Amino acid sequence: MSPRPKIGLRLTTILEAAGEIADKQGIDEVSLANLAKNLGIRPPSLYNHFDGLPDLRKKLAIFGLDRLYKVVADAAVGVSGTEAVLAISKAYVSFARKHPGIYEATLMAPDPEDNEVQQAGAKIVNLSLRVLRDFNLEGDRALHAVRGLRSILHGFSALEQKGGFKLTLDFDQSLEFILEAFIAGVSSKR
Image 1: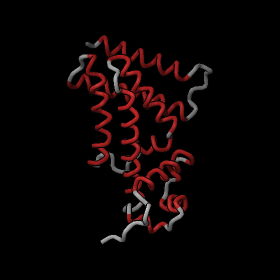
Image 2: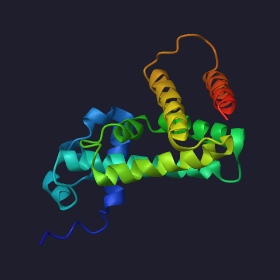
Image 3: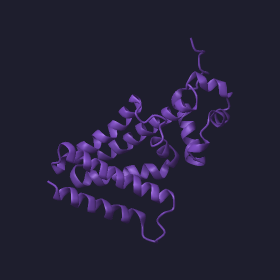
Image 4: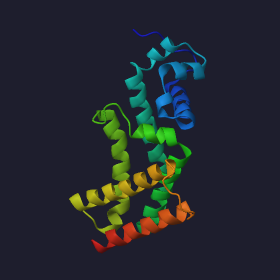
């Protein structure tokens, strides 16, 4: 039987601290030692919650996917069609801007084929499919559209975070232009 974790030290608290390290210092700085130091505990105490660094990274990826899903799902409430695609897309990019380390963690699960990681990611895919339902896409065509939208959002977020946009154009206007082009293309596939 595992020892009881320190009173008040819940998994959510620990993952929030790991996310803070990732956002401020980068995902590579998320280690058991740095996390323990940030929490004011000894590193062995973290083994009550994690089976080492890969398990911490997995749980941080799931934590990030759950947070991303909540932000995107909240943006989808009460809107449909083009408005819904724009809303969830802007929410996605906003999340990546506000939480660059947590966002990166969502892409770096030690085992992306892990069932828990797959389930967390599937929620976002299923939400995207529901949003794109208004465009009468079915089966593989709907999944291709979800892949396309995710590629746009991730590519835009990654380029922005890495300083890849050097022109003085407004980022949000560029994003909206790209999304409108995507929506026009998806609409033409009806």
